[in-house]
Amino acid sequence: MPPPPCGVPVFGPIRAGGGRHRIRRAVRTRRRAMAAGLAVTAAALAASAPRGDARVVRTPSRAAASPMAARDVVRAPVRIADAAAVGLLRPGDRVDVLAGARVVARSVPVVGVPEVRADEPTDGPPPDGGALIVLAVPRPTAAALSGAAANSALGVVLC
Figure 1 (spheres, one colour):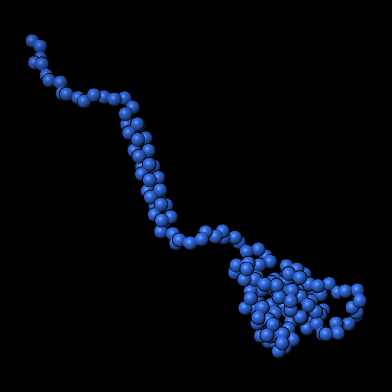
Figure 2 (tube, rainbow, N blue to C red; figure 1 turned 135 degrees about the vertical axis):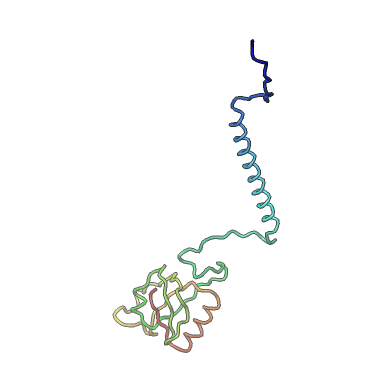
């Protein structure tokens, strides 16, 4: 006699390779969510930025006196007491300017060293005692240099 019939359980439909597509879809959804979040953050930052004129930020060159704006930097002619020390300077060198033991200007660039004229004697110091150099300095420093030069002889230290 044959065995009694048994019931077959009910199974859902089987889809071949369906798991792989689910993973791809989940990754794609997360990428979209992250991109949307970044876009919202960028928009919020742009909206909260201070209003005003847009300025281009440039790195200061070697000849700039400081990170101040170029309009705040002036060329100041300065008479240095030691003419031989001025002979060592070239445009682009950085110097500290001293008045006695006090530092008047710190790490300022030399933008010009006038050449000695042919009619001036080269074997001794100039008749007015010193040599001229041109420095690129902020306006307040130019005023301090002028005041210090009126009271004492100026010297330079190469940086």
